Image 1: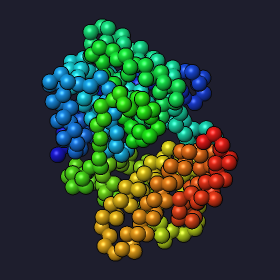
Image 2 (image 1 turned 180 degrees about the horizontal axis):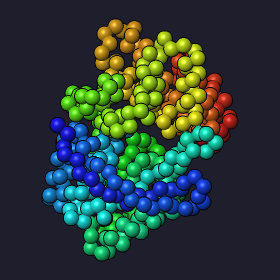
Image 3 (image 1 turned 135 degrees about the vertical axis):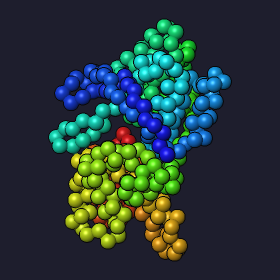
Image 4 (image 1 turned 90 degrees about the vertical axis):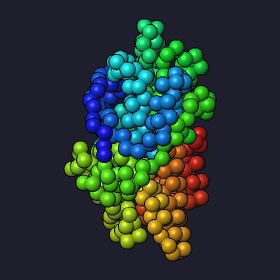
Length: 336
């Protein structure tokens, strides 16, 4: 059963938006139905509840694990446990914004000014005697300058304040930040639990083990249908015609954030497929494709200016970036 939903508000910083100056930060409030999105993670939630009850809450947490498994929802639940009657007025959420420029969608990093404003609010509420919570969603998108600014807050934490970093890519976060946070590791949710909670959602999505995707599909079925269609195409990749591969490459290049998510979902599906295969040759072929997708994701992040070339190499040659292509990309991007 899905717990009964409750609706609450969050203060949100977005930085920046299309048409704004690069130093501008947007601040406003949104409403989220939180409890209905928490499927699974009972052990983690009980551990956090006990920490609150015994007043042994860390000043900073790192919630790390695959996308859309419920990290953000559990962070919200912890904020509510910490705040009590003050929730949600004392909870601030900081996250990157997705913008469209020249027909392409990209994520704008969380910048220094947003970090300074968020930590300033954290300090004000702390001095006022309220337990305040700052949730940094997609924390790996903080710029290098923002991470350095954020590090100062972790080194000198405000009394009674709690910071929760949420990420699926901890490799992009400074080790000095990671070492100052208590790590909470999330895993994919069992398909059985998702079937119980979302019997009306496509099996393709349930098999990915990500409740957030099921929620999104239920709330925005028409919008989400295109992503599901692309995922279905990828799962029959071996027999995919050339023109379909070209179409996928074009779609991915024009929306990099969604392209990365689509490849991550594909990796989850390949992992699940591996568990069902019995023939050694099929398992080997699937494993090779899994490694190719993983290498593609890595190189898209290393060489953002060469995304089309990297994706086409995957879709047309069924492999990750070749040594020769890597050499070319490194020469083209010497600082990387």
